[in-house]
Length: 594
Image 1 (tube, rainbow, N blue to C red):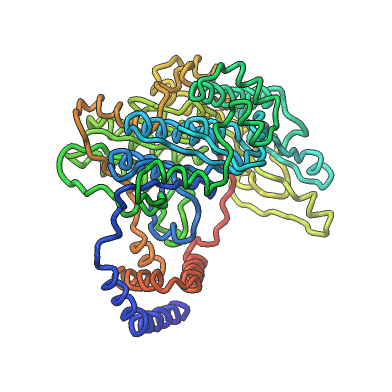
Image 2: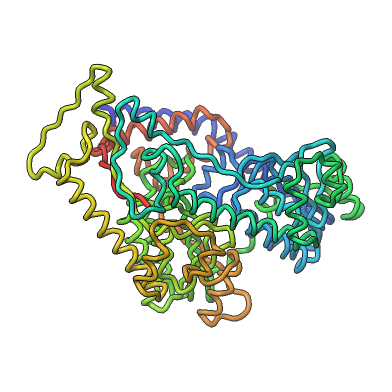
């Protein structure tokens, strides 16, 4: 009956949109049939980094309708096109007030320097204040890489260092009867430490200060090089802050003080008569490279977010993807392997980890591609740690930014036992089971029994040993050496290179160059993106039981009408169908997460 009403509702909405929306859509399409407005003869592109950044653009074209910031990948690709466009005379960057993810700042810095040095065009940066939130030193590094770095008058310059804060819940749990029952492999695998302790353990403190120090030094040295300052002297001046914008200018930390309108006017004046300020995203969308469908290609496969089993086809087609789905990535590798035009693969990874079985599925697909003669180069983004390193470990070459967070070769897993906490409020947790005693190991009432813990610990040991073996094989290191540098410890890309976990330091385009070299390709080579998942329309058809053609019409009309209520209704229909599906409300036991 529920399906019947859903079908009737779908038909009704479709008819309504057809009668009302489609004529309007046709008018709009006719009005927009002309070519997009061309880029003016003299253009300054304004890139706003204040809305947050993802590593990769969402695969789903509808996700962008919900707002949000740009992706690092789309920015650097657009910059490569803009530097060759004679109409583009400069880039004006609006910096965020807080921190930019360190590896993202590394990647953007490389892109800005390439735009300046190869394109021969200036990059101007403007800040309305730098405040000590997150990795603000990395934001300063970005500004320092510009041709001119401006700040708003009387704004605050507080790029004085890097800090990190953690909340520890052990005493709270003890007070309210919650037991965090976890296993870690090993002492540096500290993701669950806030539940187990009331302060940093020595290993937790050592590891965190180590990677923070590495990130800080990278930002300072890069800024010193770009500002032509001695790194020691620059560090001393920065750490003596905070300053006002005028004081920062007097100390040579920035170039000029002025309002946004002032730097815009300056950039337009230098760009030439009749120049115009163009939104960076608008330029990128109207200047897509022409599609080339023949000739040698390098496949680009993306993976951003937590690594999970399955496919993205079950999610809402209007939502952004926040997971790496093992079926989709494995299919992308298979498609690249079978594509005769693809001569090499660049695997862009920005993931903090996830399921061991999902990671192994992706790694197996990578190994199949390599066995078929397709070299694989990993380009690490913001992080490629734990499961993110598992799926990277057996590539032909691994390239990371100096500030990429990687390694974390380890495993943890367990549960929260909340029986005592609930009992204090009159709630009793009782469990029944059939079969072996381990069947009730993940019950939420009590902690592990000694027998259950022994079996669970054995499971952790097997997964950890498998992780070590894969890294040893992929990196051609003795297993004992891998165990020595593993133990769950996080390393920056710079540190990982010294340890042999990473081959080179660099960004996406350095990975492309490496893939070309491994495949013995010369000259320009087209990039072929492969994601292996369903299209948004296929996902809609599967979830709502409506034909793909109907859903394309519905989605296009909803987009033109711009009615957020339509999106809300579709999301609710998706969730209703998921709740009604077999297993849609199943509860999964905790599994090892890296």
